[in-house]
Each structure stands twice: as C-alpha cells, then as structure tokens.
Image (cartoon, rainbow, N blue to C red):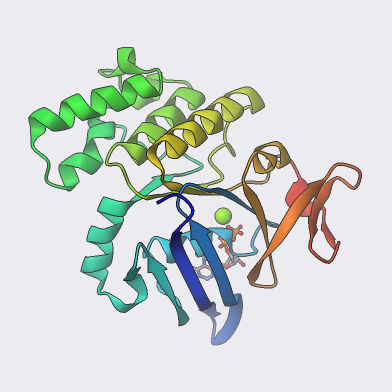
Length: 251
Ligand SMILES: Nc1ncnc2c1ncn2[C@@H]1O[C@H](COP(=O)(O)OP(=O)(O)O)[C@@H](O)[C@H]1O
Ligand SMILES: [Mg+2]
C-alpha cells in the first residue's frame, strides 16, 4: 500500500471573513500525499499551515474545492461523519501537547480507543504497549503535569498512533521543546509512522526536522510548492529558486 495516494486536495480554497472583509488564506490549493511518506510543510507564520491541517482533518471546511482521504470524499460528508472518520483514521500531535490534565498518562493514551468504542480490557493493554513504544511504560500512572515537555509530547505521540490511524497530522510538534528533545520526539514519531505504514504531514519551522522528510512543501500565496533547504542561503528554496528566509527561522 505504501506509495499509493492517501490524501488528495483539489482546488482547496479558504477565506476568513473579518469585519465584512474577506482575507484569502488558501487559494485553490492542490496537493497529494501518499501512504508511508513523511512530508514536511514549511512557511512563514500566518501563511495558512494550521488552516490546511484543520481542513484535512475535517475540523474546518473549505469554501471551495474537495479533499479525499483513503478514498473517501470528506468534503462531501456531514460533521458527524467527519468526526467519526477523524477518530478512526487520523492522529494529531499539537505544539502544546494537549494532554488532558485530569487523566493519567495511560488514560490519555487510551482515549482514542475508548472513543472508538473498544472494550476497556483490550484498550488498556494496547495503550500500555504503545506507551512502551515511546519508552514511557513506567509513567503510565503519572499525571501529565509531572512529566517534562519532551515526555509529554512522547505521550501525545503514543495517543496519536494508538488507534493505528492511516494519517498523522503534526502541527509544530517541537515548537515548545528544546532541540534535543524535539529531535528525539520527531525520530520516534517518524519511526512509528513508518512502521505503521501511515503518512505523516508535519508542520515545522526547523530546517533540521524538515530536512529529514521525504518531501518538503513550502506554503506561500495560499498554495504548496516543492522546496528544498539551502544551507548556503539559510532558507527554503522553491522550484524557481526563490527563497523564504522567515520560514527557516528556528522554532
Ligand atoms: N478563525 C479565524 N478567523 C479569522 N482569521 C483566521 C482564523 N484562523 C486563522 N486566521 C488567519 O488566517 C491566517 C492563517 O492562519 P494559520 O493557518 O493559523 O497560519 P500558520 O499556521 O501558517 O501560522 C492568519 O492570517 C490568521 O490570522
Ligand atoms: Mg499554525
């Protein structure tokens, strides 16, 4: 299955209206993501990267265009159907971890399975196995606030993958971590995503993390463009050789 199209976006357009004025964020964006790939999305702050992830996950809807994931046209479904689809097929990793503070580490990781209606016994065993994968089985009964930022993000990685989604969306997952723990979190995330044969779309400002991706996509003028990191010019270069230094700033 690796290498076949998982996500297809066609003509995806999103405007935000503010005080009667319309501000275009995504402008007829086309993109494809394949199973098994790690694609890094870079671009300056405010260019629409989070908006794109929210549209792919079905949290938000485009004003025009269509989005297909695993053969399902999610732009043609109801909010309820999109929620169910998201719970089963998508895993998220956020910049601020978004763990539930009143639940233990194990309960946080179990949550996606519980929401999908799996029975409590198998849920706990599966969540514990996933915690072991991120090296935190011994912290199962801790609450998130006693963990370091890097550890909390590893719990979030376990939670994102525990229900074996086909697509992982990570929005600046290292934005709140030091370089060492950020690198460790992304190594773990990419290894587990590859083992699962899922696709990873990761938004980052870090050139080191983007450089490890199978593809770098640079967002500008509401669209995605193939890009590569240029050491000599300290920025991401698009196909035409234009540079965006801002998006290369370290997180
Ligand atoms: N709910 C909203 N209402 C109005 N404008 C928004 C909303 N969400 C995002 N925006 C605007 O859309 C643009 C893109 O935002 P975002 O996708 O968060 O950018 P990025 O993640 O690349 O920093 C920004 O100008 C932001 O201010
Ligand atoms: Mg953002």
